[in-house]
Image (cartoon, rainbow, N blue to C red; front, top):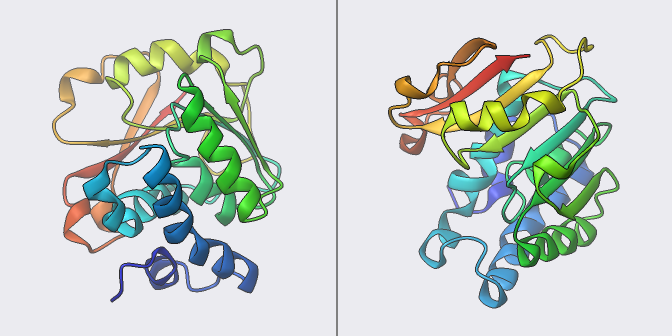
Length: 210
């Protein structure tokens, strides 16, 4: 298989639309170009964008296919992960991508505009400053899970119309048993149950209902 994100997306999500195929197909070149100007992904890792970044982000879509109208906050999005791939996958959901580093938000805005995403807003702001509440907070291992929970659980609204309760969906790898002392109801999903690539052997999605 090539190292193009769209090939891996089609492997696991064969029912995406022609528009989504075209959007995923543009990501490799867009990120390679931006990464040469602003280092949002480690230089050596840009060749692994398909698996390590795009497909990894979409593990959340396997755990929970979001209901139309869901509102999601991506905290510490960096160059747009997991928010950008999920926004392509769920065009009828709204994604707010935030990061403390302004130049990374510059990249997110440019990529979202280039692939025609109408459901993404990106903002240079810290989560503590936000007043809005969301159905889900999503993120990719920006800190210890217990610290992330304390920082973000107040940003989640009660209720929800999805098959999982509103809460946090957190991509995490390695040993994090000592990070799970939180008040939320936790469930841990093995990404290797969904994706066969070796990269995912130790990777998990933590769902914390709030």
